[in-house]
Structure formats: structure tokens, C-alpha cells
Length: 135
Image (cartoon, rainbow, N blue to C red):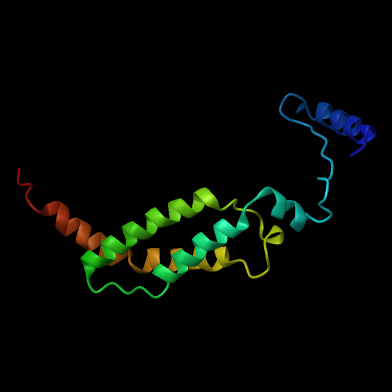
């Protein structure tokens, strides 16, 4: 974006009354990176994120709870593991990720299992919460 382009953007923002609501910046290509994929590879550790997704898929994709209590435990543990993944995955748009990105599969596993185990896990939680508390 040249200086003229910035001035043009400022004119448009002012005309719309948005000059105080916008932040303009100028970016340059990262040295040594010619493509968006190369920039991603330099900026993020996708290997760590991919390993976390692989472990998640391995643990939860084929898991079948034996009963409501196990559904509750699996669902709770799966949600905890998913929160960990969110801390290491940069959540980039699909066009910036490898074509066979394991995170896509992991997200589908999470959504399917979380939904599939919901009734059994909730049933167990309700039964558990109705038990008298012994102190």
C-alpha cells in the first residue's frame, strides 16, 4: 500500500465519519518469505499444534463411553483437552493452513463427540447433583 493509497483510505474514512474508529497500518513482506504459507511457517509453530490435534483425535475419535458416568468423564476431559489445543493452535483461516490440516478433523471429532455424549453426560450430572451431600 503506497502513501497515496493511505491518503485515499483516510479520505473515505473521513467521508463516512469513521476516521476515529479505524486503525490504518502499512505492512511489508517478511524477509525470506515469498508466500503466505512461508510467512505462517515463520510466525507460528504449526508442528506443536498439529501434534496436539493428533493426540486429541487419537484419544477421542473412537472413544465409546460404557455408561452415563463415563460419558460425563470423557466429555469433561475432552473439553479440557480442547481448551489446551486452543492455546497452541493459531486458528488461522483454512487458506493459510496445509491442505490436510489435522485441526479440521480434530474440530469435527470434538463437535461430534461433544454432541453425541451430551444426553448421557447430562443425565449422569443430574443424578449426581440430586444425591445428598455427606459432610
